[in-house]
Length: 387
Image 1 (cartoon, rainbow, N blue to C red):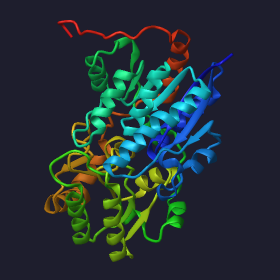
Image 2 (tube, helix red, strand yellow):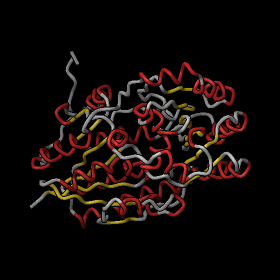
Image 3 (cartoon, helix red, strand yellow):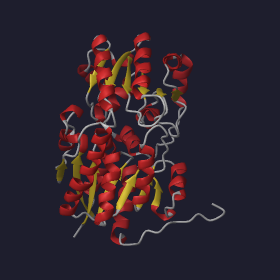
Image 4 (cartoon, one colour):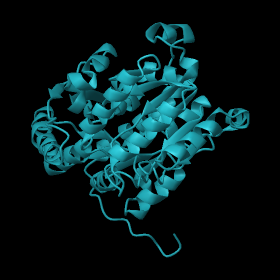
């Protein structure tokens, strides 16, 4: 009988990263794939991206509504739902291992449920640092709750080991999202133009997620970005909506107002889906905002990006990333750099530290080899004096 490996996904971006891994696990002769879809996948205002999972040929073993609202207490209710309701599904499905990705509050809640139920966790994406979001703390908490660790860079591997994890269970495999860039068949420029009413080549791909830690309010920071985009009208803008973090609705309202004032040059989409998102990134003039995609995926497409504020502070980044404070004048300066001939020529030689070959294949091989001895007790790994 095959061991059961359950992938749990709660957001559009998360599933986009896990997609290739899910396909490989489905093809494995040694394990049986299970999928639980929850969170924003089941919500219309976030694009009801469960349909994307189904279109990819997966029939989720469970769909679990957990989302409350984006107020602080609403987020706590969502976390509570994630523990109990996803926990109930896990009890019924009885997987031998759960695969979790990233750093979100839903994810750490699900990890707590797995711990109580005695289900080992394989965690993807540990060791990063993002000082501007409470995701940073959730990510490290997930590391301590997990038994297997798949990190994107060697520096992140060292950090996971520093947290007391056995080096034999920490694997540097690259970023799954970059594997999508390298292997996925993207849409042609003509196909993309059919989806949008203005030239993508003259557009910025923009996303601004809630800033959950920091002294400056997220509304003030977002307003600085919108003000800069209003001033610098060289570019059209394709905005994807923010994710389901605390007080997301405030940013959503600001984006709606901005889009109505700039109907001819601003397009807002709930969710592009991974193929369309990467296709837009491939042909656009550049990426702007505070999404990790501008740091992790964009360099592999030789695309310049502007990272605004502190949300992603601490991540390793390539020379294609322009970091700037969330201030209108600084964003305008960054836009000038992005559009300069010197910067654009330099993009050709950019090296992406998150890029490695066969990421999902390596993860599956480790899971297959480990799952038969999953009963091993996890112990804290102390660093020696020379480490």
